[in-house]
Image 1: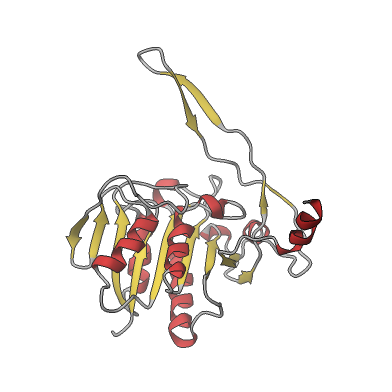
Image 2: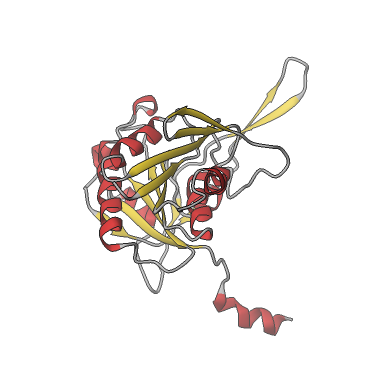
Length: 261
């Protein structure tokens, strides 16, 4: 196989979602895995600048990056593993849980894809949504997510991605039990964020906080160019595919800010 895929994630090198993604793609390309040693959920697009990092080879073409972030994994893989030829595609995931709406800005999974497109490499990020009503978190069903990943990557190798530079696809797969097995192209929705943090006292009497997971709640959104949000697609059992770009400028506000000045 002449094509090469770099796989990473933000759940760590032992994640079942990572292994599911590797299994889904290793029959259509040469797969190289570089994943963080520890879980790096919600680390955003961070690079490690204050300490050295090292690759630890676990088996052929499977590495963990000692306490690195997903962005570190992509950035340093290009330095160490792909000196002569870049990978044809970077695939991030399969994340355990959703990356919908503004969560994309927190997401280490999405940020690995961001780093890839900054380096001129096409990228797709995959996330498996789970629901306590349907799923056991310890035994998530990735069967449909694997099917989606295989089909989209196969399509990429045949047709490329329909994206310009510095853009990637953010894909969220609904719980398998409610999946309608239909893909919808969406825009990023608007999440509702609460203050979910627990307060505790350690054995020395010091107060500490533990940030919890936000509930998957959202505001209905209407976009003049596209009505269906990623959150609404998932709520209705559809797989959501959202094209994401890194230019965060709100161009419609430029004139108003100029007038304000």
